[in-house]
Image 1 (cartoon, rainbow, N blue to C red):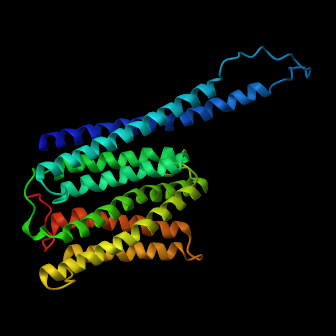
Image 2 (image 1 turned 90 degrees about the vertical axis):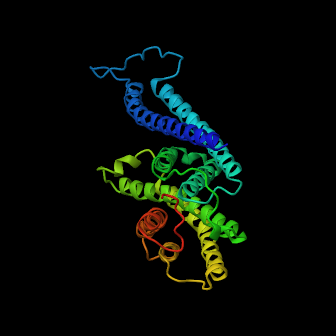
Image 3 (image 1 turned 45 degrees about the vertical axis):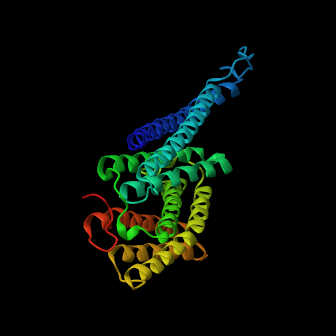
Length: 324
């Protein structure tokens, strides 16, 4: 089952990678469609001769125009991308189930398994968002890119063979605390994607035509991206808050104190404060949406620091990274 899990992860990465390529094709064809449609409109509107007299229009073919064919190819590429993302999510889930069966426990015992589960939550949540808001499909290019990068990092840097759970984690609080941390982290991972896209798109809508603003030329409107960012963070924050509280209760039971400023506890607190600051700024009319969204991005950077930096560079009571 362990070998099956490893193979399914590889296939999931491949599915996400091809989905990213398909999204990129849709994105590129969207640009091509705009270039084709403009001269077509000019030709259709021409009806005056060189001497000022009217001329009879040429017979128009009954088939689709070049712009329509390009738009059809773009939609097809987008649908293929969504289908491949769904396939990747199923393979991803199969990998988690196989690893859990092989380990005879929940597959959350080290950094590799944590990243594997968080990315699955993010990808599965993206499909739910897409089902509710299909007009956001082009955002899938950036989401699939994040999935590929994180899963490739997990496979190349974080991978460890299956080992028994660390004795300190043998508690029912393991299920309560870690499951809620993972779920909240997956939603916050997804929320970071429209947050970054919003910052680029809002700059593009304000007339900025330099890198990286031009990358957001074909993503949804800034207002839709900002709204999605807020909804995802407002949903994840209470869950993250509960996870921190559950961790403190577990620490009291295991170590005799609820809080000791361990590196992971400290960075969890930093992340919580920043995300709380984002939601407060988002609810304050005098704070610009760009400023508030930057707090969401910084919050996710602190989450990455808590996951990678703390586990790799710091020693503490939470040192269960599994990289040794």
